[in-house]
Length: 323
Image (cartoon, rainbow, N blue to C red):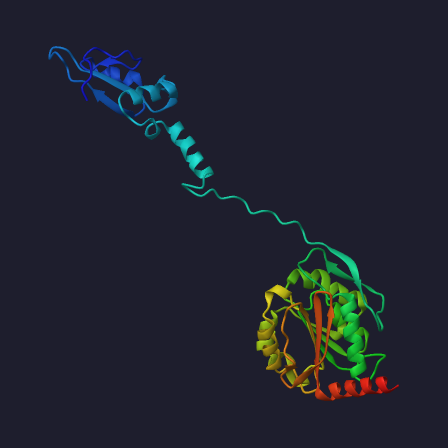
C-alpha cells in the first residue's frame, strides 16, 4: 500500500528512525497493526501509524473506525466493542452461539374438594382432586350409572357383590373409594404420579377410613399389566376392574387387548371402561361380553361382564316389558 511520505496527523504518529525507546511511551499494550509507508526520499524516515486496541489509547471508537476505513480495513474485525455488539445482534436473531434461557417456573399444584362419595358407608364425604386438567376424574353422573348397573347385574341392587376391585389410572381414587363404600372388600389402586399419590389419593383414603383395605401400586399401568401374575398372587383374578385412562394418551385397542390377555381377568370379572366419543370398542374383551354401552355427552361408558350377567339382564328387560 503506497502512502504519502508526509507524516499523517495523528496523536500516535512518530518517526520510525527516532529512538526506539519512544515506543514504550506510546502504549504498553500490544500493537494492533502497523502501516509502513514507502519513503519518497531515502534520506527521510518512514511514517508509521500505531494505535492500541484498548480504549485507553486515546482514540475513540469512532476515530478508530474512520482510520481503519481510510486504509481499507473492516472495522468490525478490529474493534472489540463492535464485535460485541454484532455478537449480541446475531444472538438475538438466533444465529451464533445459543443463548441459554432459564426454564419457565411452573406454578405449584394445588387441590380442591369438588368430588364426593355417592353411596354406601362413606356417602357424601368430600374427596380431594387436583386443580387443572392434569387429572380428569370420572364424572359423578357416569360413576353413579356404572355402579347402579353393576349392582343390578350382580343380583344385589342395594350394594356390590363382595370382591376385589382393581382401579387402573386411579388418579384421585374416587372410583375405587366408591367401590369400597358400596361393599368391596379390597381395592388396588394403580397410579404413576407421586404427587397425586401423596397429596390426593392417600389423603382421600385416610379421610374415608379405607386405607387399611387399600393397596397402592406406584407404577405405570402397562408395567402393572406386564407383571400382573406377580401382583395378583394367590388371590386370583379381580372381580371388578375400572379403566379410566387419559383419553389422548392411550390406544384403546391395544390397552383392552393387554387387559384381556392378562391374569387380572377371570370368567366372572366385570370391567368398567370410560372412553371418548368416536372410539370403536369391541363387543367382547377376552371371555367377557359387552353388557352395556351408554353415552353421556362426549363420554361413553362400556361395561363388560360374564355371559350369565348378559342373559340375566336380558331376562329382566323381558319381564319389565311384559309388565
